[in-house]
Length: 510
Ligand SMILES: [Zn+2]
Image 1 (cartoon, rainbow, N blue to C red):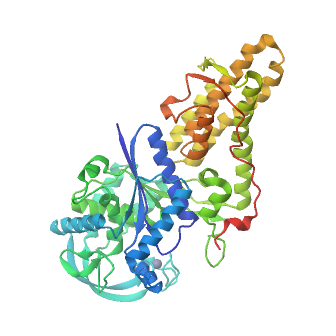
Image 2 (image 1 turned 120 degrees about the vertical axis):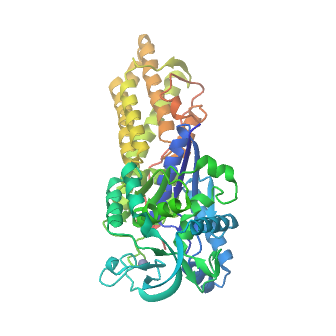
């Protein structure tokens, strides 16, 4: 069985997960589920990034030991992820023993290979980024990410010889066109590398919350070097469960936000090369979600709360809306009105109705029992359904979720039109046309079964419920379109996606 290893960025625990964070996890989860559905032995990793000065500061402010604070935040994060049906196989914390062991081992290996040296450094440092920032990256004298003035800092530090990897990185990117996706991010990264890479500081002195350097205990490992290592520490690199590392590394996809490509496409692959570890297959940088054309922020008071949104739309509804409205490979804008309209149009009206009309009519015209019949290429819906599934698959492989849904939705809409054209309520009046009536519902059932499978990465709960109502166990992608379909003892269902009206306030962070 082929393997598939997918990861998301690990999150800083000094604030609750927001919609942007949720968007990334939902996208990665959709991909993980799609691969499982396609028969891949899939491993999906998420986690929290805990060794930052901000975390330590926040713990102190709350009068907690950092470990206890991180444990509480982990519970909070994971409860949000559960409410969104995120199906990670492992959740790593960077203050865990297994992670510390792996970071220590990676550091030692890179040091032994001659890419780490001691030196002094003076530069501008952004306290929120927790890294040195070069003069040329400042905008009006401020860190562009935090709009904050950097401080001058001088340190005796350990450095990673990043400058040695300019050539090898460019060669790797050139030889592996899918390494950085989408293409626009590849271009940005290539420009950064061509602009010249400077060695980076990878340690801080005088800190206690962090991983001590194996060669100098008065320093801890700089947070980014520490955090990036999670992708291999979770697999047991450096002494843990080596079986996982051998089985799943290299990662097939690191899914990250477009603001951290430099770390994932420049520093991380250089670290791996320096340690003699294989590079990931691909880094996918998704875009950002804005609300009504504005960035969501505390000061604007317009932060959508993913947990509250899941209460209103359901986990399935929210997942669908995010991945349908915001193309994963670039930025997208949403509004409460857009989400509501989309939910009611696509889910309540089109898919929900297709399911309820079909089952209601089968109970009415056949008392819920439709004898099994073949759904083959001669069927009227067959060609359109096949085309929709093929389009879906092509887009899914490239993580183009919105386009995958757009492609598949043509089949849902076609099936609704098919009902209008065939007018089963008229066929049912004529006993001589029983055969035709059966054929109509065979085709409609085939579309529903197929929908239940191909849409399950987006809406795992609702699609499992739909298949269960039709009397089917979970199916794989190779089972659709089904060769034969029928129904026994079918009953009218509860609405799969009840129509929603909401007060928009209910969706925002307090
Ligand atoms: Zn900053």
